Length: 266
Image 1 (cartoon, rainbow, N blue to C red):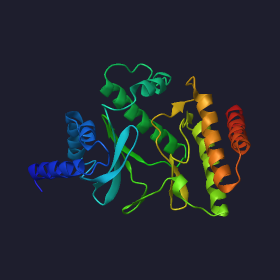
Image 2: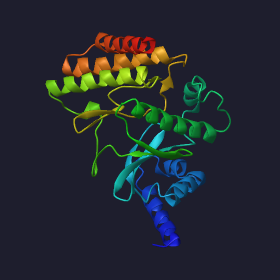
Image 3: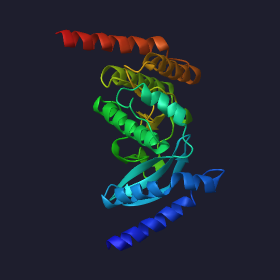
Image 4: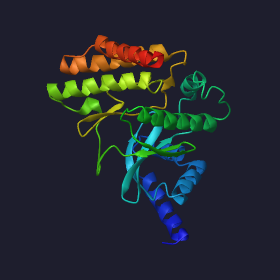
C-alpha cells in the first residue's frame, strides 16, 4: 500500500472511531479526543510503525478515552488523555510532588503530556521490578500506547467484576500483596489509586493498571497514598471473600524492606 493510501485509510478509520465514542455528549467528546494536535501525533505514531490501524472504543474514563489498535498481528491499546476536560489541578498536585516532574508548568497540553510521560515511565519502572502491568510500547503527546491485556476481542475484566472461588481469590490476594511490596521496595513507587477498579484479571493473574498518578517515595503524600492503597485492597477482599487484612500486607512490605536493607548492608 502506498503512503498516500495508508494515510487515506488512517483518515477513514479515525472518522469511524469518532462515531464509536461512547459518551452522553458525543460531539464534545469527539472534539476533546481528536483535536488537531492529537491527530498529528496519531499520524506520527502510524508513520513510525508503532500502530498500523485503529480499532473500536474500549471505554471512556475520567481523564482519557481507551481504544484498540493493531500493529502487524499484535493487538494494542491507545490511551488518549483529553486535553480540554482533564482535571489539571489534580494532575499538577501529583506532578509537582514528584521530583521527576516538579518543574512542569505551562499550558494544559504541557501538563497532560507530562502526565502521559509519567504514566509511561511508571509502567516501565513497575514492569522492570517484576510487577505485572500492561507493557508500555510508546508515548507521544497525550497518547500512551500499551499492550492489550486480554485475548482476542475480550479485554480482561476489572477485578471487581470477576467471581473467584476462595482458593483462587486467596492466590490473587497473595500476588497483589507481593506486587504492592515490589512497587514500594523495588520500583520505589506507590500506585496511589490502587483498588479493584484499577486491577485487571487476566488468565488467572492480576494486572495493575492506571499508573499516571503513581508517585515516587519522596513525594510528600507517598505514605498516605500507600496507606490508602493497602486499605482499599484489604477492604475489597474482606468484603467480597471474607479474608485478607491490612496487617498481612504491611507485614510483607516491611519484611521485604528489611531484607532489602540487609542486602544493601551486606
